[in-house]
Structure formats: structure tokens, C-alpha cells
Length: 251
Image (cartoon, rainbow, N blue to C red; front, side, top):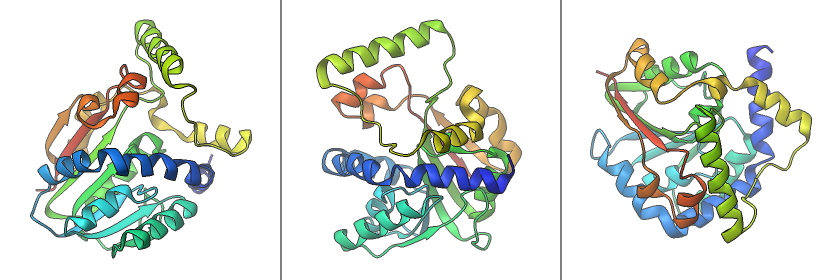
């Protein structure tokens, strides 16, 4: 599959998820906004500046950081997500810019941002080397990249697979069927799945081994944040899927 086709497949897949994912994020705004604000502010490279939220989705991080005084731009590969984020920002009375962009190759000049953040985005990359080099290009000297993600599809061994199945079974017993925001056709989802580089890659080991190759320094990895940022339901459902955080700087 050509790069252009991969970009189109990823964007179309998330177009189908926009409405459902917005509902999930709205719940997080109501229950978890403060813990996310504290986390992002604790690792910021400066008091304020230009921030880029990559894979902004419904705009959760973008709105949160605009409230904290940052000049915010949010980008996403899904046009529907950008429409949703723009609408949510207007509702919140927030001044932020949202643009439909290929997160592997943006249209911004180099050294445009002091702080780049993203959550649950790197797992959808089809060319991580290209994406991380692009994000490094976008950072100003002294800037910082912060991202959070997990091994959503990669399973290390049968013991981990069994643990995930036990967690989901208990979740179903207590809370019902886990939410799936995808409402599109099977072919679109199949094409999306074919693009995913990290489906068979152990992380954050890959990140530890590769980020310095793209120019980043001071790479710091927190292997698990589940108990710090998830609510009770997600702590159960994702108990065996650690949410890791990576920060990396541009010297």
C-alpha cells in the first residue's frame, strides 16, 4: 500500500469514530481533566508558548492546554475529528487552531512549537521514523515532545493474553460490553489494520532504542500511568495493558 493510500485509510477509519470517541472524551473531561492537566503541566518545557496537539481527536488536550495559557494548534488525520474539536473549543470559549493534516508530514515551518503532546496516537503510525523526524523538525530548540500510548494490539506472550482476557471478562461482568467507537465498514477497518507498524512491536522498548536516532535527547520513559490517570472502569479494563509516557527534548 502506497503512503498516500495509508494516510487516506487512517483518516477515513477515524472519521467513522469521531462521534463515538467524542462521547468518551466528554466523560474524561468531567472526571479526569485535572489529573491530565497536572501531568501535562508538570512536564512542560516552559511556563507557556506554542503547543501542538498531534492527533487531537475531539480536542481534549488542546482545550485543556489553551485554558492553561498556551497558544494551541491541534492537528488530526481525520477531518471529522477536526470538525468535532473545533466545535468543542467554541463551546468551551477557547481560542485554538485546528487543522486537518497528515501527522507524518505536516505543512508547518520547522521550529514552530515549544511543546508537542499526543495521547494514544503513535500506535496508528504507519511510518514512525518519518513521523518522529517530522515532530523533531517542528520543535524549537529547547522544546519537548510528550506522548502517551500502550501496546494495544501487541501481546508479548500467552500469559499476558490470558490476563487481558480475564480483565475484560471481569469488566463485562461489572460494566457490560466495552465501548467500541468504530461504526464504519469492514473493508475500511481492514485497510487501517494493514497500515499499523506497531501491531507487532514491543513498546516502549522500541521508543527507548530509536528516539535518539531521530535527534531527540534526554529521553525519559514512565512505563505505567494507569493508576494515575484512569478512572475505576479503565483501571480494570486496561489493567494488563500499561499506559506508558515518553518525554524527549530537542537540544
